[in-house]
Image 1: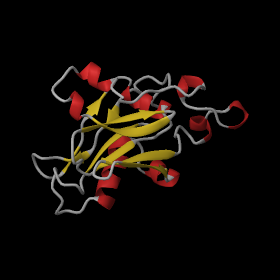
Image 2 (image 1 turned 60 degrees about the vertical axis):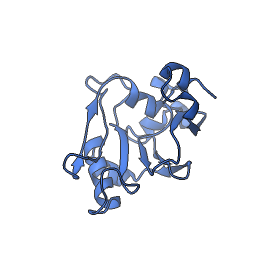
Image 3 (image 1 turned 180 degrees about the vertical axis):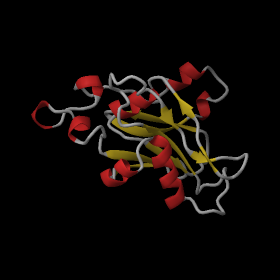
Image 4 (image 1 turned 135 degrees about the vertical axis):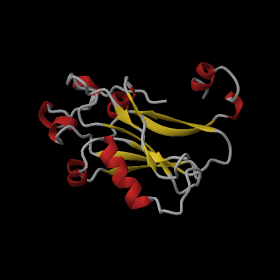
Length: 173
């Protein structure tokens, strides 16, 4: 669940002198969100802007993160795998074709890198919440869901909402 809106053009945050954070960083918000489902901890990580410019877009950046962080012997369903949600630097702007985001991971069919692309507002909402992407890892002890908002991040228990109406479960807590 990603909710957006922190002012500025397209909800991409205000920087110095009325220039948005994204404008001052070349289309980037400047940080990634790490979510560890095993521990329930979340952490903001500064975005390496040089790496982001070298590996432009969600597929390239996700591939680099997989290469750097996920060992070859890690399976698709192992705690050491990553599932990422990575919009491009133009996400949330009026640039035509800027809506897609990428979800890279190590896939179960081949146990190799895999990506899925989708369009809509999810990528823009990630950036409106102040992030260039979300990197999820780990295995929760019970069912959980993650709420990302410009006011904060929470990993919440979903046990009471499992197998029930998803809209009701999303608004719980």
